[in-house]
Image (cartoon, rainbow, N blue to C red):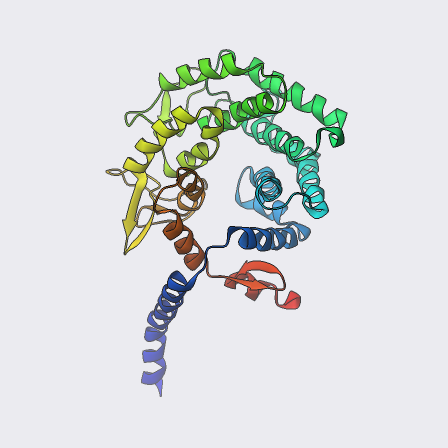
Length: 350
């Protein structure tokens, strides 16, 4: 009897791996690509999570978790309105909810006000960009005058704060170029919504960025704000994120960076494709930015990388989408898209 129990105990991990492998392979070959359906189901799942204060829980795991959760949530609703629905009152309400959360005391709590760009480049970049996107999905006559004025003021602060710093600070003594990309994306968005006034600034910024690329010709992950000296070279998580916005700033520069990004970060493991967290030839561990790194493939880098890959019309788009769906082990429950793990956590809501 004891021997049977021991054998089962040793075999259990292998059984679990085998079951997961079978599930992933079945889903990999049967998952359908339906972005509109998946997006709205995902948004309903996130709305359910936000109702349970998932943004506050995220803050416990990630230094900017509260703002990041709300920014991505609000932007996803903006994309839903832009690409799949002409109007939706729930979408507009949720975008406003996300923006209000970001502009609250809780939203600003993790950031310092007295910086060259108030509250730093991360907070200002994401909050300004979401505000601009909100204005963009609204009819001009329905836009709140106070929000228009706030958007214009924040864009002015960004341009002023970046006059002498290509990569402005997010925290005292710390600067991440991805935050600067969000800030400049906000200025490019301004020029699409209103009478253009930042094109010269944007082109000069691109010139300065090109003069401060890493040894692989890519925008670095972190720099010293005072000097612009590279602290850490390009990484998959920040590259995927920057490319998702860089095409809105300058499409030619985006495509130049995308070619180098794909060359250094696009890879495959065990028959699955994805994005490395560290460029080919370099190895490292996962951290709060990357999420899990398995066999050097980055979770965040791969998921976010789907956007720039799909934007270019790359032949790997459909395959990568199906692989993410399969590995995510998600299912549809009560009009929401949630993972199997979440199903175990929410038994009272099924």
